[in-house]
Image (cartoon, rainbow, N blue to C red; front, top):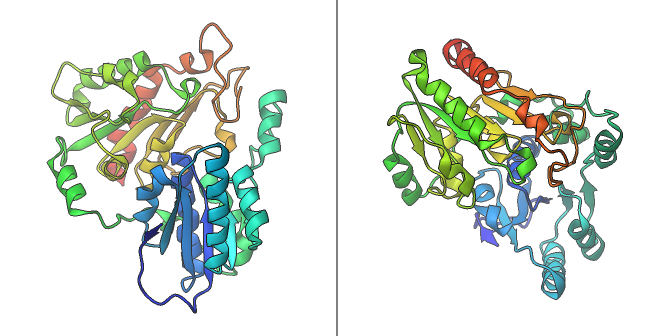
Length: 358
């Protein structure tokens, strides 16, 4: 457990938020954390998260304590669940917000006997959309707002969602030094992040390269540099390049917190249905988000007014609630139908039109 506060908290009501993963889901739920602290400023808030994502949550000023969970399997996982349940009881948690809603959290609820409120993930409606192509989600807000709206009964006050834009946290001296030493740090930046946890959610890498070529060929965009952001395991991104010094590929060069902070330097981000979209938007950075095997109506679409999503609405899409299922067609039609020229046209419009008016 990472301790963030040494003050006496014995008299404060104590809340625990549980969201183990994934990256995008955790980033989205930081808006809920800010809202909760806004309506309950005197509450002590702890956040239980998978160990690999703890640095992100630990950088939130609204979170008083970060509890970590190392996801394993078998007997080791059972022992860790029992230990976490005891920790919930020992810390006299008054209320648990279960934002994950899986088997682990159900076990924690049963063993700890703490009051749990479980998020409504609309799982049945998602499955109906995938299997029968009946959409009962289209009138719901984006996930960025949905959890807050579901728990609005906790507050009688109105809330301006613009207040949820992320403010920079306190960075370690080492992180600040590394970010300040990175190339293209004080220039106009287009971030391209072609990543996604599953292949069916990725716009083909060759189409990203076509987009990069279109940007580099446009003299009206010559002031903009391009930065590729991707994780250490996203080796397919190594192929992205440009013939000029305007393209810098930082795939695998930054840790999670450094990557998060670097998004704040961008003018615009192009990415898939993935955590990069939510990291960029949390800083108020407009995104062009490309959707394929998953539906924007699942709730993970961009929420900023100046962002734009691309979704071909192929007859077979969505084919999965998570994107985990491989594409069953000879060609990944839902992605191939989205052309680089279309993305480039909107990108240019945003960079030379909308964004200049901010």
